[in-house]
Length: 246
Ligand code: PEP
Image (cartoon, rainbow, N blue to C red; front, side, top):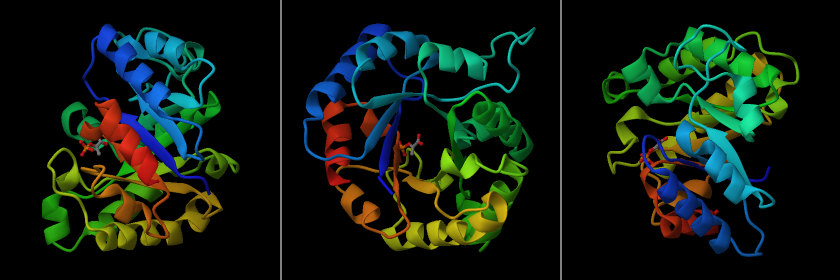
């Protein structure tokens, strides 16, 4: 399975900054065999970054999506709008959405279904908090997120869907899961997938303070199929170094 390195720009970048960052990534990619690459700018910069990425191998992703196709949902963006602007992927259920915007496994499930229906590849984020890990509940929490977030999907969902294991305590904290900690959860998720999606051949990304220094060791684990990168994706040089490590 080809690895996927995805950059989550979160609530960063003006239009000018977004164009410059996208250009830096495209120009630095080179011709060497590389993983699949995607970037997720904020909504306001999607169209501008789509222009920069046109004709390049870098995919455009969004950071969230609503489940309705259109209607009176002030502030929301539909899957069809994301397809229209050029998105191939969309992050769903990021822990920051769960923490600050009331995302639940039930809303994640609605968004995943809507994204798939529109032809998008959802990157579905799961992961435990520090308290849950310390209570020994990591696998139970992740299992619930997977079973409820990915419930009742179409039979072919596994071909497009991507999962990102992102321990909440590792996101934006500089505290990365060790390769062994990440591998343990990835392998566990993989065992759940035949029952949930009908296949275990689904990319499982690791996310949580991935940097050029720790990327190679994480990506060498057998069940780590790529990375979802926050902070280190905001500079072309560090994002490119992570891509090179894959
Ligand atoms: C993320 O936003 O998904 C993330 C993993 O952030 P960071 O790399 O900054 O921890």
